[in-house]
Amino acid sequence: MGKVIAIANQKGGVGKTTTSINLSAALAARNKKVLVIDTDPQGNTTSGFGIEKNELENTIYELMLGECSIKECILNDVIPGISIIPSNVNLAAAEIELIGVDRKEFILKREIEWIKESYDYIMIDCPPSLNMLTINSMTTADSVLVPIQCEYYALEGLSQLIHTINLVKERLNPDLDIEGVVFTMYDSRTNLSIQVVENVKDHLNQKIFKTVIPRNIRLAEAPSYGMPINLYDVKSAGAEAYLSLADEIIKGKED
Ligand code: ADP
Ligand code: MG
Image (tube, rainbow, N blue to C red):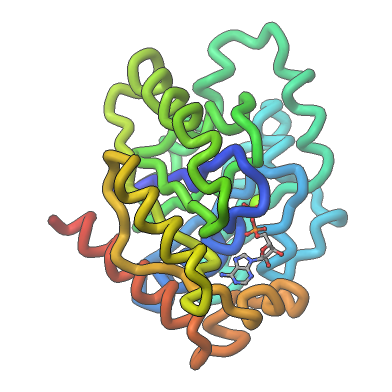
C-alpha cells in the first residue's frame, strides 16, 4: 500500500523542495517506486528533475480543475523509479478558480485513490503557504514531514503549522500523522546550528529524525543540472544524508 507523505512548512527556503527531490530519489535508489507531486506554482521540484516546466500539457493545475485525469498528468519514470505530477506558474490561479467548488479540500485525495496502489511512496512538495493546495496535500497524506532550517528563526511559524495539521486531522483527515521533523542546512562549524537543534528539541514535542541534512553546496547545484543529488554527486555529504533519511522513513513504515 502506498504511503503518502506531504513535505510542508509554510516558511519558504527551508528545504522542502530539496527534500522532496532528494528524499524521493533516495527512496527510488532503495528500489521503492515513488510518485512525486509538485503543488508549488514555482515548479522547482518539476525543474529539479530536469523537466521543462513551461511546456507541459497537463499538470497538477489541470488535475485540480478536473480538466485531465490523474493518469494523463503523470510523467512516468522521469528517472528510474520516479514518476512526477508536475507543476508550473499556472497553478497560482487555482486558489481562485476553486472558489465555490464543492468539497474542494478533497480533490487531490479522490484522484490519488485511483493510483495509490501503484507506488510505495507518494511524496507531495507543498507551497510556502497554508493555502488550499497545502490543505489538499494534508487531506491526502498519511503523514506530514516538516523540514526545519537550522537558523535563528527556526521555531517561528511552527506552532501555526502544527495547529493547521491538527485542524486538518480533526475535520478532514483523522488518520493524519506527523512523520517527523528533519533539520536541514546544518552547519557543524557554527554554534548557531547546534543551538537551533537543541532549542527545537526542547520546545517541540514531535518525532525528530536522527539524520540531519548538512549544508552542502552540491545539493544547491544539482537542480541547475536537472538531477537529484544521487545522480549529480553520489559521494557528496548531501547524497549520503538523504539516503540515511530514506532508510529511516522506510524503517518507520515497516515498524
Ligand atoms: P523550500 O522548498 O522550502 O522553499 P528549497 O529546497 O527550495 O526550500 O531550498 C531553498 C534554497 O536553499 C535553495 O536554493 C536550495 O538549493 C538551498 N538548499 C536547500 N537545502 C540545502 C542544503 N542542505 N545545503 C545547501 N543548500 C541547500
Ligand atoms: Mg519549494
